[in-house]
Length: 237
Image (cartoon, rainbow, N blue to C red; front, side):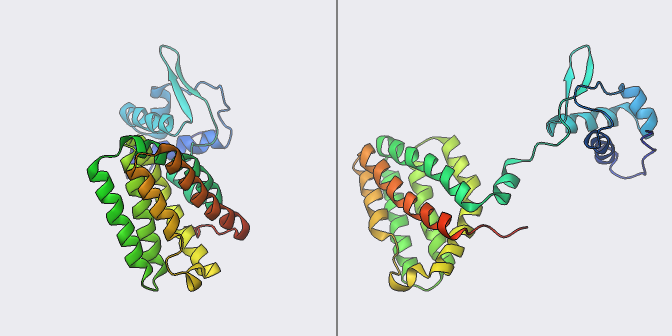
């Protein structure tokens, strides 16, 4: 199947898209060696450097892999979906389940590694959560809640944990706002979950790793149960 000469425009993107389409359609099955750069450049009507950059893009998408001295081979017919996109498409309860695994250990590490500055930040975040609880804006309350949890994760002093939690935040935020709205959890208790969050902060501040992990697990598991029961999920983009 001829590839067809490309129109002028961002040629690398066009070349990558044309090659990707051929791979996805099965024109080049998994395990197939792609034609050489010169052949592809001739079929596409572009220079070899454009083809080279397009192949790099396809390698980044997990579709092809160059083998030293052998050429470029197809290794998959579907591009690897980036992590943020997968999170946005996931059920919020599934994301929350992973969050629970991550944050319980983060709380444990925070209790062992926290500094005076971390404790100050956590207590300030707890005060912010309480201040938000005094109003009727569920979104502001959820934002303040996430700020507190972010401060606990930061106290673990592990940049990978911090970055991972940040990836979860957009999905968690919308799911929790939806949950509060659905169940009117703050109707009877505007400071919903305050005692558990205060206990978490104090356990971390006291350096009690087991208690910090226990409190975090109990609080997160309770919310996870509600999410699974009521099936809230982030809206589609």
